[in-house]
Amino acid sequence: MIKNAQLIGLSQQMALQRQMDVVANNMANINTTGFKAETMLFEEYHMPVARDNDFPTKDQPLSYVEDWATIHDMSGGAMVQTGGDLDVALNGDGFFAVQTPGGERWTKAGAFQLDAGGNLVDASGNAVLGESGPIKFGPAETGVLIGKDGSISSSAGAKGSLRIVEFANPQSLKREGSNLYSGGTPVAATKTRAMQGFIEKSNVSGVTEMAEMIRVQRAYETAAGLATKQDEMRRSAIQRLGDANA
Image (cartoon, rainbow, N blue to C red; front, side, top):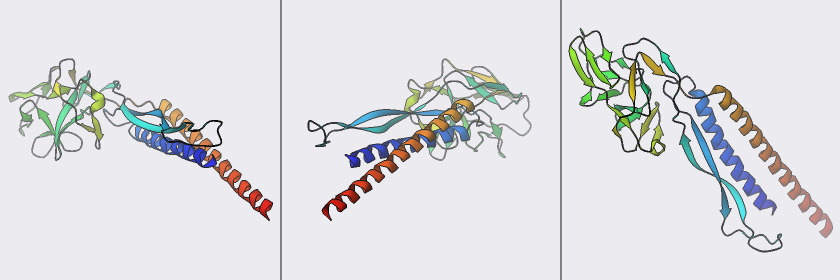
């Protein structure tokens, strides 16, 4: 029975460790433009072949802790006005499309800039995609305007339109590095509006995440303390058994 208790406690510690990783990542990105917080979901896992003769009846189920999903908090972050011509926030559920070496990816981070070739890129240098491909500006172009529908114009005239996409199930997206998402089935945005001169801040709540970090740490310490006590019980039992047989 002590062994089963140790395994159950270990499953809790492993789940708490992964939860701490998620909380720490949220805290690390509290100032990342367009970052969306994550949270973990847990469920009770019954060991189907559990047996323990210490119970009055056989085959008593043993419950372990299992982290079965990590979900994205897609609630909006604060909109901050910057006045930058290439800063764009999305009011709605949409994502920008960018071209990476691994293919198309999706992002909420609209702090764009121009690279040496005049291409519109994100903070990592990935090309921001328009409806007809990457967007490029000439060295003499000025007066960049971005409409609510994502249309872009400058002193040289119309430059196309930002490719803004939405997803029926944003939870199907897979988070990647550099504040990007992959996967899902993108469709043209119908309920999202672009806001030039704004950026969307991270939706991470520092107070909430700090409180969660403290809670997880205390829960882990409690589980570790129980494991130590179980070790002591086992050593005591072995010692008494040895003394009885002496």
